[in-house]
Image 1 (cartoon, rainbow, N blue to C red):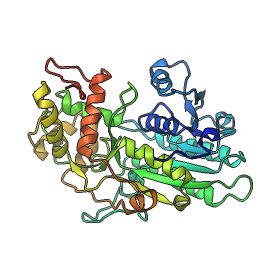
Image 2 (spheres, rainbow, N blue to C red):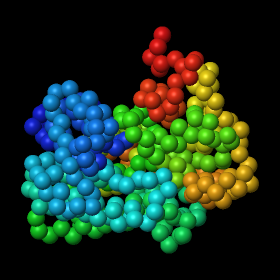
Image 3 (cartoon, rainbow, N blue to C red):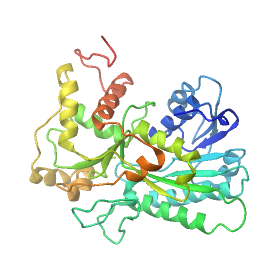
Length: 370
């Protein structure tokens, strides 16, 4: 990624800077010479703050406190910024209804502040494929940016509802701006994000991979996920994408005018089954002492477990459902070439072991060891 000539004097706000995707956004922005202001809930939480500070090699990072639910925090947070990457969003593995209000109001709080700040040229908003493909019955449909999740279907969980309604609220707000600063808007819709972690806090997608390597998944259900290098298990029928690709998409979308006013799906294709994930991890880590089950779990077993496990219950309707996405727009407009999920998963697991999220086995060999 070529460094912008104006990068040295351009300040970019990254919301929720200590999150899985956001830390990669911060890293790539700093590597490209941008000045970065990152928001965190508390400057006293060193577990989240230290990994961010470790990314700053040239004194280009500023951290400030801001809460999605506090509108008064955001005018100062956006002040003087040229671009905003609004990455922050609640993402519990089994979400309750409260995240819907938090996601909507948090998004609008950031956009309202941008509307009152003359320096802001563009907002890149992180949505999700959960705002695109949830609640549809068509088994063979290939989803693209024209699709919206069907919230009339009760199968759509609170996370899917929060991402859909927050994104719709963002578009409605932006399209109806008449006074103040009319900034540009791009929305990115990544699938389940996987890839190396830059922080030590265990997020949703890290929990998914941890279950494979920590003897917490004795058998593998027939589930398909869309992968992108970093994110989800409650959305078990999603595709996968590398977290580094997601961050790169954010940085590219900031200055790519062809992305203005557009949604862009960020996903590797084709999607992966849980068994694909298990085989990748078993091949790499099995010889190092990690047990990764490649036994297929019968539907009846998953159903039985779902009676007592909320996470299993959340994925039950998605078993045997193949997921298909079209990533043409991301390739054509942003020029993205997606990382293989095989590499993303392996890199992710190594980072988790090195950060102590997973235990080191006696036979463990570091990724770059000779």
